[in-house]
Structure formats: structure tokens, C-alpha cells
Amino acid sequence: MEKYKIIYEDSFLYVIWKASGLPVQSARACVPDLMSMLRNRLLEKGVNAPYLAPVNRLDQPVEGLLLVAAEEGAAADLSRQAAGHIHMEKWYQALVCGKPAEKKGKLVDYLRKDGRTNTSRVVSEGTKDAKRCELSYEVQEEQGETSLLRIRLLSGRHHQIRVQLAHAGMPIAGDRKYGGADDGYRQLCLCACETAFVHPHTEERMRFRVAPSFLDDRK
Image (cartoon, rainbow, N blue to C red; front, top):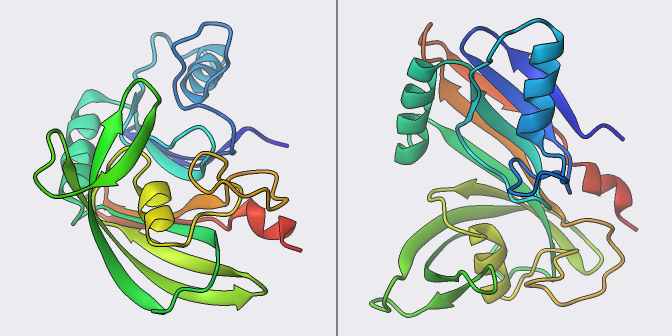
């Protein structure tokens, strides 16, 4: 199976799909990561000292789309769009355990990260180091004891979607860290399936979509 695929590229940016299990960047030299693979590809093509800056990151077990800037000005512009969560849209699909009582809704919580365990948890407002997080969701399909959700991410916190959904009683299938269920899925069933943004140079509105591979694993 391919580890990554370039969906779009020009002189300013790349839109890349990465597989579940591939880290975007790794601190360990022995662990291959997306940015190293992309840099080696460009070096092999004769590009000297390529500029590559990830605009958004995906956790290692999450598959889907991410943006990589190919020059400094584009990196600054796209990062501003990503920080505002307005000009840049980020949509996910998640297969969750259970059937939400509300078929459409918004989750607003406060998350606190624990760096020692590399986990986050929902805490009460006002807790030290807690950060507000928000997402909206809609049920697209129900099958057996699982539901397919379409999610609009409205903030960007550590493990946000996984933690918020688990806290709401609908853990993501295949999530051993927050779901705790051996549900037979080979990967975390969460995909960054769609992104939209304004091109930093042409100012064209761009949109890209992919289909989650985990849908092929459904029973």
C-alpha cells in the first residue's frame, strides 16, 4: 500500500494524502516520515535544498489530506488561514461505535494535554492549561452498531476529535487509546477527507477530497 500520494502540486504548495501509520515528522532518525520521503523525492528530481513546511499535521494513526508549503510566503499565508479556521476548512470522516442520539450537533469542551502520557482529556472550564475546543458533526450513515460521521473541525487541539467523541459516548472505531474496544478494525477509523483554502498566490478558492480507506474494512 502507498504511504503517501501527491494530490496537487505547484511552486507554492503541495496537497498530500498520507496513509494511517505514517508520521508527518519523526524525532527518531530510524523512523521514516512523510517530510523526509517528500524531501528525498525532490532531491532525486534535482531540486537543491527544497523548502518544505507542513501547514497542518495529522497524528500518526490518522489518514488523509494535509498541506505542505513549498516557499516561505505561502507558508505564512496558509498558516494564517489555518489559524483562523474560516478561510481554511478542514473536514473529517469518522466511524464511531454506537448511534448518536442527535444526528447533527456541536461539541464544545475544554481539553488538557498530559505530555507524559501523550494524551488529552476533557476537563472543566477554568482548569489550569485547559484549552477550549469545538467541532460540529453530522451522521451520514448508520450500519449495525457503528455510525459514519462527517466532522467540521473548528479548532485544532491535541487528539481533539478522538477525545471529544469518546467523551460524548461515541469513541472512534479502532481507537485503542481512547476507545478501549477491540472492534476488529486494523486502523484508527478517522480520515481528514476534505480541505478547502485560498491559494496564497492566485487567490483561487481550492477544494480537495479523498475517500477514507477504512470504509473497506467494514463488516
